[in-house]
Image (cartoon, rainbow, N blue to C red; front, side, top):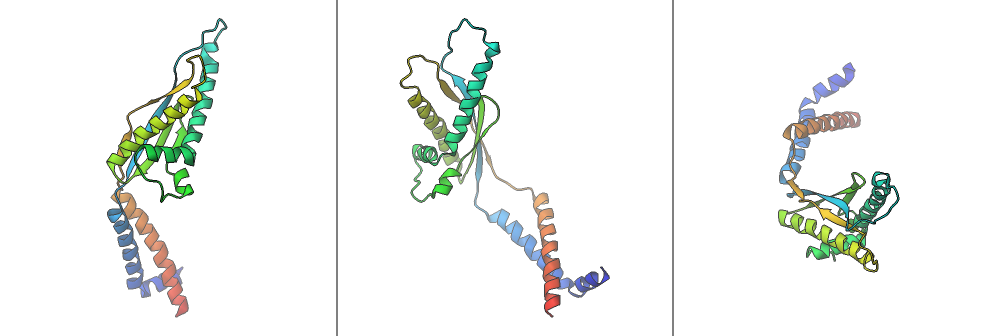
Length: 199
């Protein structure tokens, strides 16, 4: 341990210099990175109507089960590249330069409960976030309507979209400072040891 301390002391300028460079590079990344808006859209799975029955409904247990299964369908739809391409087209965004991998990861859908699905995504500006939020609801509604087009009874599902929550991404200076300091010390330690070994 004393030998390590002695090596760092003999190369203190290099050690501190590497830490300073790493910290400046990390802060520069967060300060000059492109502006990103993160959006969270809550979708509620509802019904167009109810089926009349004389049987005991078990407090609508089977209906809740059906809602839960359909929520899973919504999640899979949002993860589909074809549906995501339709969402971008509906929002007026060209997807010709998108790869298949980019399309499949543009939106993240998560089932929060039996009837609630949360969709999150990131955009470079506020206007695009609003357009995509509306397009998500429109495209999913069209898909549901296409499934229900041949049914005679009005019992199918529908999507109730809440107002999107749009937040501009920012960083916590204290967290970035501590993380960059730890990274700088780690890199400086091993670089100084490597240079000492080569000498």
